[in-house]
Length: 330
Image (cartoon, rainbow, N blue to C red; front, side, top):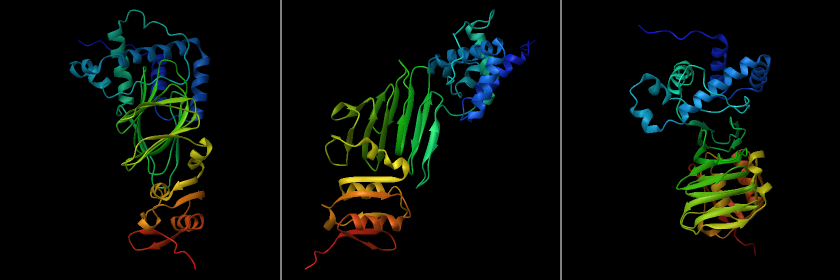
């Protein structure tokens, strides 16, 4: 005979709140949650127990979860264990009379049906779209045009995979809980800072606006970047570190692309992430550089502005736009 777990309305409410806050709750949800916590000390205690027990699940090695024969473990393997941005007070012990395994099983059975989602949460944008994402740890991400990334927050580390595109990261400082962005074969590791990464078509750019980041995994070894520094890697070229204006490097977030004697081929690589008709640089314009501010706009308008900033002329075909050097006037 199987004994049912006694129903505790406060504990159930704590479980419901825990599940709700793992997605992308609105500001009103956080306000209501805070009011619920402060309404009764038992509320905070119940939520603290749920969070603590779920962290215990996060600490189980992956191979233990995969080989465990219980239904609870199989359910837990499909759940993302995240901690709330709001601190629930001092961490207390588990429910009196329940061992860690039993307590974890109760929470797994109660929460898992509400949190059946992949370990990583995917975020993406369409061509020309910009999206802001607030993570549960207090960090804020901005996704640029045509970007895909994946996020997983755990007790020990915060992991992001930038699959393709451009994103800025304003990372909340959490001691002993690094924030790691995987981009191709490289990793960008920080504790708290603001930086931007562009990874597209074998091109990589990492720009630091605040704090310090470490980029590892390339042939150049680990490279540390401070405020105002930028790592750039182009196909077939040596990785370089250069000084840059952080505000200009982050201008894409407000719909502007700022260039200062930038090779035309790099500018076109940026534009191709925003336009539907591919743009190509003719060999005659390979040495052209661009200085100016391009507004992210309708693609024909962007090409016209580029013709004003650089000595190039655009020839449009049904399949592409070719930028050629202007013939010198006699």
